[in-house]
Structure formats: structure tokens, C-alpha cells
Length: 575
Figure 1 (cartoon, rainbow, N blue to C red):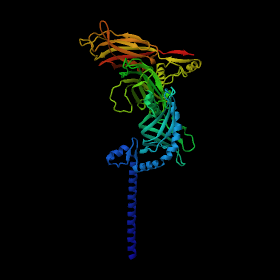
Figure 2 (spheres, one colour):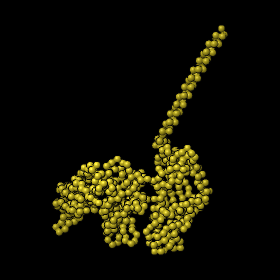
Figure 3 (cartoon, rainbow, N blue to C red):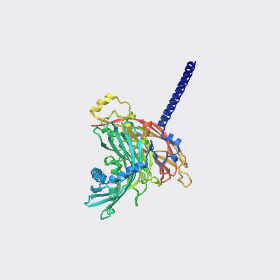
Figure 4 (cartoon, rainbow, N blue to C red):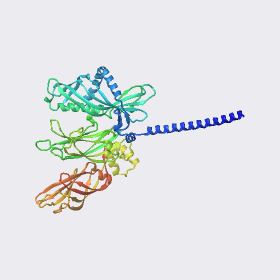
């Protein structure tokens, strides 16, 4: 009997143990599943998600959010890095000084001002003060490499002396002193390999120059004794640094043997620029008006800087000139425009400057912009009005699918804007026949056509006459051919209506422009009210459009115009 009781009890206890074990395993399995789901959720969490969960003031001081990825930087680690850099700095100074001198001298020679015949280092040491790293961030990148950015601050005491020789035969030792630099260096470790140190090469570049100050002093003399020398040397040093090491320019240091040509800086597209005009420029001359000209560049290399013609005695110059620039990195590069007053034999005086971020341009689309001029691009609070400059911009990445190719002139060099407009203005060419023609002679397409301009009306014109009215009329001028037409006079009206249409035969539309000037009619003379200047780019691309244009030079007023383009492409043979 006891045997059966023991058997039953054993079976019950065994079943109970099995049930408890199964439930325990199920509970543990559920906990593991929930934990895995939680870890996966944290892995997918972005910077914005973490900011929503916890306000920035609750984070410890060593947590820093970059613009693209959350990174944690421990101050103790930066202190460790800075302390060791201070210890080894004498050896770094000795090793790096000669290397920097030999690599920088050719760059200085490339940017040497015209007034100098020679520019070399006579002394170059980095001094005893080591730079300090103030921040580290790891940027999002693909699996082929790692991108790191280091923020560095250096208030150094280097011993740098330039041996400057002018074309007049004067030799001057110029000391570069009191250097203060703050910037962000970018390091790219790529490609990642399975062999130590786990990457094939290092690319380094100056990603952002926040501050770079220095002073120039002639040893035993005064640098101001030679007019323009100080400014020329400062521009040379800034431009050399700007173009030799500032992103997207990068230096490649191979660590392991291999081909790293894919890391080199390569062109990614072209930027077409039409410098149209400027208005309301500052007058720097005591007698007469300024003589403005423009300099445009993406990188401040001599052979890549474009200079416009000089417009004498005019604060509202019209250039209408085309330029083409090579673009290496549209996401970070800018187009810079600087307007100068020509002073003859003396150094030109800066009237103002402006910049355009290439990332704001839509590829393949013409953008018409007015840019306000400032004294210095690094000064953010320049509120003084210094005038504006008018540009038309077209960015064309390499390999972009479009109709930019001109079938009539494959060997004739044209700007990209010309290829866009010329290909859109004629679609009647047969490709096979064109190939045979191109093999015999070059043919350049001239964008020729009829421009119909309808002067519709004007609004809110300023009062000109003593009676509180005006007698306005409009004069239309094609700038290149100087062909003119004018409307009838509308008496005593500040909101006149004309609805008159004029046709212009345009021989070269890409390089011509329409000037519409509004005058007040008097018995013995006419009084200028204002004007608007239009390139023909938009009407060629769109065929027809209507718009209300503000009058430049007038206190108020707008002019309603309608433009229509009828293309008549012709071909000019060149042997």
C-alpha cells in the first residue's frame, strides 16, 4: 500500500516540477524577447528621439550632440590627449617644421602677389606651445571608412620669418607673429581592412576655419612703408591656406600599400555663372564715381578666378558676362563674388562681397538671384547697405541625364548654359547627318530669334511733376544692338496703361539683354524715373512669360511686361 502511495506522490511531485520548469523557461524566454526588442528599439533611436525623451540640461557635461550623430566625448580623454601632445610637442615641432616649410613654400609661390618677385621662408618653427583639442565627433559614414572631426585651438608662439623681395629690388624680412587659430580638422580613415592598423590611408583636411588671426611685422622696419604690401601678404597667406588644405581639398597619407586614387579630389560638375549687373554700389572716389569690376571664384586659384571688365564712373554697372567654374563638392563649396573699385596703379578697394552656397542650387535649373553685398563674409552682423549684385546660376553635375549636348558642335567649346539654351532652341537636327557635317567643319549655333515685348502698364510711379502727377513713357533698348523702341506718352497718370507690343530681331540672344527705362515727358526735356534690366535666359527657356518688375533707381514703381520668344536658329561656319 505504501508503495502505491509513494508512486502516486512521486508522479504528482514530478509533474509539478515539470510544470514549474516549463513556466520558468517560458518566463525567461519572454524576458529575453522583451530585452531584445528593447535593445533593438534603442539601436534605432535617433538624436531627435533622445532629445524628446530627455532634455539637454539633464545630460552630463561630457555628452555632446553633433549635427548628424550623437557622440559622447569624455573630457578626461581629451585632457589625456592634450597632455601627451604637450609632452611630445618638442619632437613634433622639430619633425614637422621642415616638412611644413617644404610643402607650404610652393603654395605661397603659387599665390605670390604680382608686386613681389620672391616669397620664401627664412625661418620656420612651430614654437613651444602645443595646440589643444577641444572636441571630437564621429560622423555618420558608410562601412568602407570612418570620418572623425577634431576641433583644435592654437594660440602659438611660432618663429616664422618670410624673406620678401619686391620687384623694385627691396628685400624685407617679415615676421608672422601672434597667431591665433581655431578650426575643425576632418580625418577620414579609408578603406577599412583586416590588417593592422585596420585602415589603408588617412585623409586630412581643414573642415571649418572659425578663426585665423596673425600679425605681420618687418624686422627693423615698418611694413606700411610699402603701400599695399601688408594687405597683399595677408591675402596670400589666407588664400594659400584656404585652397591648399580647406575642404574639399584633402591630403592623403598612405598607411598600407595600395591604390588610393579614389580618395583624391575630383571634379563633380560645372557651374555656369552670368554676371548680369550690380546696383547701388558705394562710391569710394572723391571726384566722380567708383570704377567697379568683379572677381568671381569657387577656389581662389589664379587660373580659376574670373575677372570682369571695368565699368568706369558707374555705381550701377551692367556686365552681362559669362563664366564657367569647376565644382568638386557641391554640398560644401560656395561661389564667391567680390566687387572692387579700380584705382589704376594703386591697389583696388573692396566695395563689397557676397557668396552663394552651391547646395542651394537645383541641378539643371537656372536660378536668378540678387545678392546683398557685405564688407566681410566672416562678419555676421554687417547691417550697412552696400549694394547688390545680380547673377544667373546653373549647376550641372557630371553624368546628369539632360539635353545639354549640342549636336552641331561637339568640338566647339561652349559654356553649359549655352549648350542648354542652344539645344532647347533647335530640335531639327538629324544626328547622323550632323556627325558627317562636324567631321568636315565646325558649326557654332547662334541663338537668333524674334523677341516680342508687350509693355502692359506701370503701377505706383513716383510723383515727378509739380502738379503731383507724371507723363510717363517707356523706352525699350536691346543692349548689344542698341535697337530702341518707345511707347506713347500717357499724360498725368501714375498708373499708366500702354498695351503696346514691339518686336526685336535678336542676333545673339545669349549675350544680349533688354533694358526698359521709364521717363517723364516734359516739353523741352525728359526726366529719368527708373529702369529694369532683363536677360533673355528665362524667355528662351520658357518661350513666354509675364511679370511685374520693380523699377531700379526709383522711390517706387513697377512695370508690367510680357515677353515672348520665337527662335530662328542659324549657324555660323568656322574653319
